[in-house]
Length: 574
Image (tube, rainbow, N blue to C red; front, side):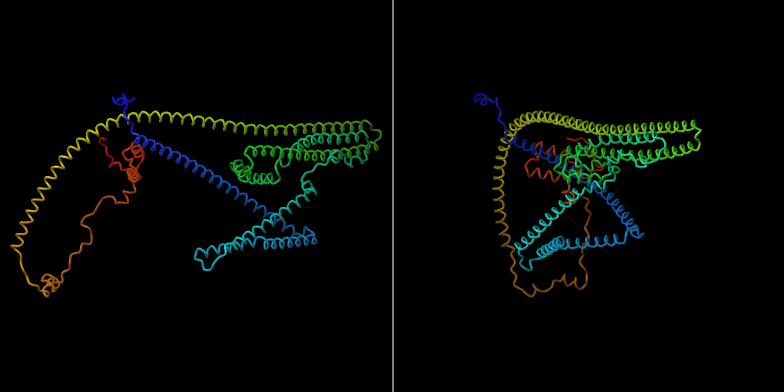
């Protein structure tokens, strides 16, 4: 290698230039990353703003609906009380209880909320006084002690309220008020018994009465078997779907605030649930939503089944009572017309045929209801399956886009790296040639400067000799033409003849009130407002105005306002 370097085979490397290029690339990469980060943050802020605006719209509609419902309920209550629909004793007890609740609420606010507001107002007043200027010395330790005391009191109050809430919840659970307030409750004992109107009715035909009893028992048995199936399904499902009651209550209230009429209601309440329940993952929310839909669907199916049983029970009871009435009338006619046995047989046959026809109709109606319930269940399952498939397709598409983006980014990096290597090799060759030419130029310039320096020194010496000779001649002339005048202070202090003439004639001096000509050019503020000038000055201060990085940066910057078409140059550009 020593022999090669001595022969000129290996050329020296300019590490300062390489370091400048590396730093320029690093700055470019840092600016690109910062730009991507700003874009991502702007997109997140835009998405968050859009979601909050949609939430506010949904909440405003929900607030209006609740306000209307509350006004309607209050008007109905006032109308009911005004019409005397309630007992006076009950109304008086109700008003007394309302007054007691208001007094307890006022006492609670006085004991808990008002001290906090007073402390806040006091702290704000003290902060205002501190900003204006310390008028009196403050005691921060005493203020912190008061704040900590209020915090401790509020924590104790919250603990007591939480204990009272849990106690009331346990009492309500023990009293089973939720089951009592349920709109539809099944009663298996009542569902299985035969109405007393049929059992204790006087029917002249025992077989007809037995057939009616069997119809009631068959109807009850059919609906009881369906109800048992639904009960088994409900046993597998929990009312809170495996969550705590607080989380499930928050989930249920949030979902109810976004009805299906709201655009993108599912995305909105999912976003709100993620805000309210940050400890729950999105997959858990989806699973809980499916479980809750299945639980509500099962409850709705049970209520529909009970309503159908009650409707069929009432229809069968009406039909049985009408049948018994017709049977009594027929028996009376039979007693009145004992001889007409054929008509009696025809009547019984007609009644049996009607009962059989009604039974067939009820069975067909039951089959249709079962088919409708099964169809709704299949539609719900198909809808859930489609949503899952759409979610899987979306995730697959996003993964494919990410994979393509990464491949394209890797390819671009490889291309940029190859281009940089080629450019670096060309720059190395160019810089080597330039260094050689610069070295020859410097030697030539030093020789020229040396000759010019010698010529200038000779000229300076000659000029100094000429000035000395000139000063000597001038000094001799001054001595020859020198004038000697005596001192006259009075003449020096009095006015001149020209000033006297100007004061006598009253002529005014000419004052120029406007410029001689107008300037049509740019101001310094307009020139410095151009981003190209500011960036070029920054590059010059950094010593990078001759680097390739400066050329790339300046070529990509455009002025704030594009130039006019008539000022654009159409000549050659070098």
